[in-house]
Image (cartoon, rainbow, N blue to C red; front, side):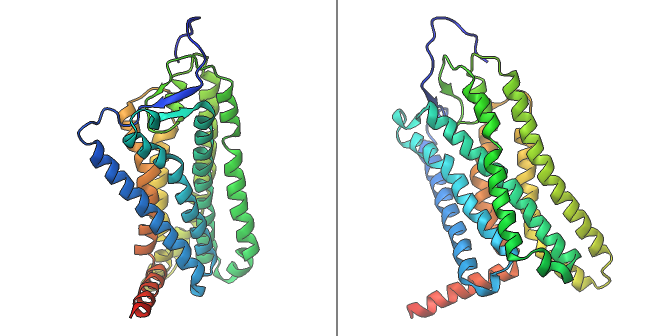
Length: 317
């Protein structure tokens, strides 16, 4: 928190520092992040198209996967284009209005919370499929899937309302330089000249609630899955059952491990450069890795991608 003085005026826009400390490697980082961003858009779009066009993948697990891929596209688009603009235009490209900054923070938090709940819904789907296969069709019907997905998006949308409202009650009277590449809570709170105790508490409580509720669903689901797998006598059947949730479990481990490390904190200040690296990991690297994990560790997706590539090659001939 910045001390208040009468000489300061209220901030109407912020300046993103981004990776200003990087000079010689600026073009290299810009190229790397641009390639990663375009690759993320391409592979998530391919997942959506392959699932949508392949009748064999018209199942609940892949229904949720298309929602996850759509979310990843939005998730990266909220922050990465603005960050890339900062590399190209080192002056105006780093400026963002007060309203634009809060909007970016709202959407980013909304999508992050939605992803937590989508992963929890996917865990529930795997739990029913493995532990109650005879009741799978009735418990995870298309109507149930639509309601679960809608609930994930709705609760995710409601998650940032209180934190953003409390942010609007803070006074920003200078300086206006945000030591980050997007509008995140911690660097913004460091610029406020108001008491941020209530805002910090609300951020911590909301973040912890989202993480604990969603991770509890995932933990209970996989706890039951492990218990069921231990009672399967056939090693081949056990391996086959586990393979259906291996990709999801990998994605959950990477995503939740990063979030628990990054957001469940009470202090505003920490190593900003390290925070930027971690932020790049969960805002760009993870959305790029998720489709690869699902395509490489899921036989049905690999087969569907192979058929799509074969069909495309055959049509060219």
